[in-house]
Picture 1 (cartoon, rainbow, N blue to C red):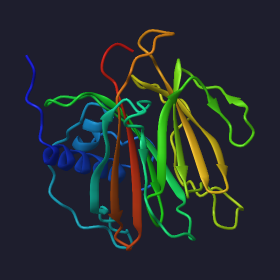
Picture 2: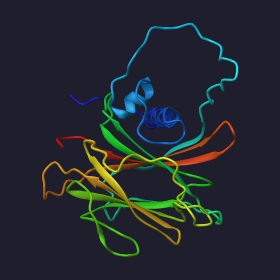
Picture 3: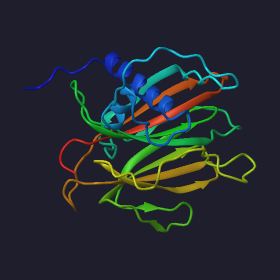
Picture 4: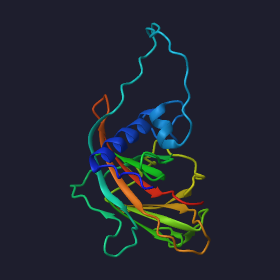
Length: 253
């Protein structure tokens, strides 16, 4: 029996809250969502933990109070569930922005959503930038190739979801160091996402590949992909722009 399809407004509200919960649980710096909080456990797939209620306590002298969570300014579905290699509706999102400054990647995080309440299960990789949303495209490929070298980059799994950001970079403006503050280990180990790697960061083109676990090796399953965007502002007034790439995790791994 099919469950009723949730409305677009309901999906947007739930996803925005879940994505913000992940960012908050990670302390604003990414990595895997922290265990123990209910919203984060829903998107990571880890069971929530509970503890007896305790009376609120005042911070000890000289102890900093916890930073307030980021506030959501914009949340939108940028690309609905679809097979991104479809030439009639390719995986592509375009933003017009003036550069410099070029948006810098500062955070990569991952999470696994088990589904429920009428929504499909999915794995998510989020990329957080400074200054603005870059344009980006994504599609499935047989292998990840370095840019500009052209060498194959090995990833676990039977396929690759390639993501290319334009007018974006993962290094500081002076080119002396990486701008990425936090990112997960290369091996992910989710139902659909197995691993990931950077393929290039050259002349405003930033590319990554996610290793994909096909249900049947050498098959060509058309996994739907979705892109979701959230703009937040921190307590200190810094704007952050997160692009979440979701891959359907239905069916056997």
